[in-house]
Length: 432
Ligand SMILES: Cc1cc2nc3c(=O)[nH]c(=O)nc-3n(C[C@H](O)[C@H](O)[C@H](O)COP(=O)(O)OP(=O)(O)OC[C@H]3O[C@@H](n4cnc5c(N)ncnc54)[C@H](O)[C@@H]3O)c2cc1C
Image (cartoon, rainbow, N blue to C red; front, top):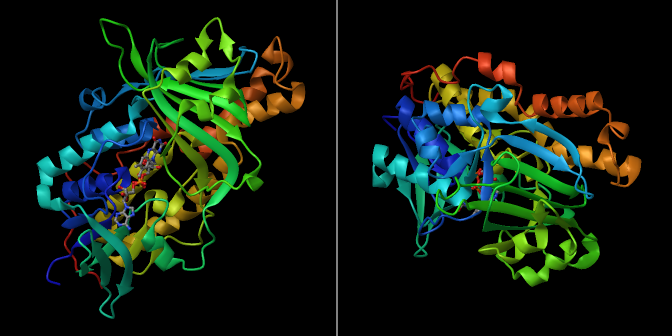
């Protein structure tokens, strides 16, 4: 090959953030995405301040994020009796130099795709192209094996292959053929959106209930100025006996509210009516809480895993999409340092595979919702004053540890230099 070229397998949030980053630093690339047509799928996700900063550095600032979501102002845990367990400000109010955004996953995805096509042209993303695996070549390059939607196949040679093909990654399966199947701990989430009036700060993430039986909800749009109603993302969750014979691999099976709403009968407070929120939903999907056991490496010569392909995690820490965006930027930074080379992928893997794999396991252990476990263990979830159950210093220490491990430390982020120096371009060395 005369000029380096990178193949990105998968055009989700991670793949498109990688493509935008490579475009920014002058690395030629092509995204191969399996679906024939991109659609605004999914419901709510959070983009943490570290990832919002990176989007800003990619030229996608608050003016655009406000069209797909809303800055988050508060994160709160509430016991089953409706009393506060813990709350803290989020984003700018917490002292970050960048906001946290609660966004509609599908609209955010479409925004990234639109932006990429505007900048790099329509050929940057090839839809209807599923990457089924790869072969490493003796000259150090890689050949991606691709199946087109019309049934024909294609072998595409590249300098590097970046796998952003999600939790069911075919590239990961090629790299780690003996990996165990998807891991499911028995929690089932039902997700949906309902038009309702935002509560508390007007943009609060609220986790209500216990670790094994809870609802989480937060607005993912600004309220309509006339009606005051916003799109509220909700997740209703119960942990079931795994022997129940459910299939834990499906993403987003559409379901009727009646199938699960009974789990939340009686969850009515003077500030919230959960059954009403669920019953007035526009959409609802069943979605088992799944992840993957970490692997020893994300790197195999000219191939690397990123995003959910590398570290699919429970959404308890609201950082799956943020982590995918950070991966994209860290891969860009590694290429600025090492060129479009295997050494760049090795450096990315050496720095992040270990710590992020730890985060996967930490989220499996309940993540920040672990505080609800402590409350449950100590008083069965019933209390008048939370200070008598978990003193404030213990609550704050618990959350600080989680946030430091997840890379949310405020001072560290505020004082960190940009991940990619403004205007930096990669030197075009062909892989050794
Ligand atoms: C349809 C959908 C809806 C989702 N909705 C939510 C949600 O509501 N809330 C939430 O917290 N998380 C949701 N997620 C997950 C969330 O988007 C990710 O955890 C996070 O954004 C990390 O993204 P990713 O790009 O690594 O993986 P993904 O978002 O999974 O993107 C992977 C992309 O690769 C494509 N792909 C898969 N296999 C191949 C292949 N072999 N070859 C080429 N392309 C391939 C997929 O079509 C997809 O576009 C959703 C994911 C998907 C795919």
